[in-house]
Image 1 (cartoon, rainbow, N blue to C red):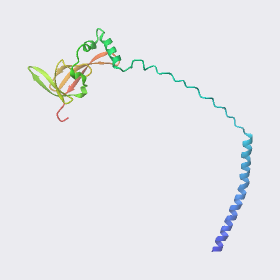
Image 2 (image 1 turned 180 degrees about the horizontal axis):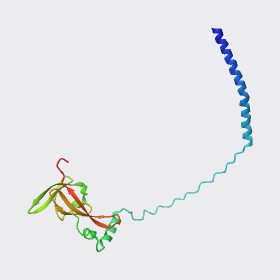
Image 3 (image 1 turned 180 degrees about the vertical axis):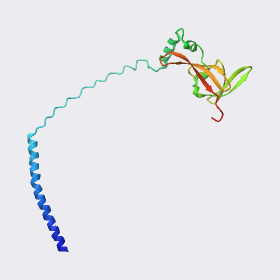
Image 4 (image 1 turned 60 degrees about the vertical axis):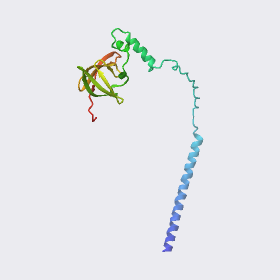
Amino acid sequence: MTKAISLWRALTLAMVGMLLAGCGSETDELQGWMDQQRREVKPSVTPLTPPKKFDPAPYMGVRAVEPFSMQKLSVALKQEAKQPNSLLAAELNRRKEPLEFYTLDGMTMVGSVTKEGRQFALLKVDNLLYQVKVGDYLGQNYGRITKISETEIALREIVQDAAGEWIERPSTLQLQEKGR
């Protein structure tokens, strides 16, 4: 059995040797063709153009008025107030009330009270309780209370529409139940 294996190995080695000898001539032929192509073909590479010089421009916007500054907004509001039919004119000439510094979302109606025939609403803002009546101002959009009922406060706000015109918009604050 050992003789058969060694004979088998000898035959395999002889066949591999003959295959390699046959491939050797093809490899030489391929190498010759590649060498010939390298000699005949001359690549044409266009030279790169040098990069353009970058000249940074100085930023001039530092000296200009910032578009969202309070200065620019106050100038625009004053110009709006000078118009004779402006809803905003009367609002800008009065003193702001304390609840105008809070958003309506930050206020909660917790109840209502009637005193001497007048209806008052109880508002909770920043864990403080406020008593408001018809005619008082609330919120940051010049909101003025127009009606108070047991379950809601109705008010009108002055806001800008898409065209930039000042318009009145009705709004309400609903009574919030204790569990909410």
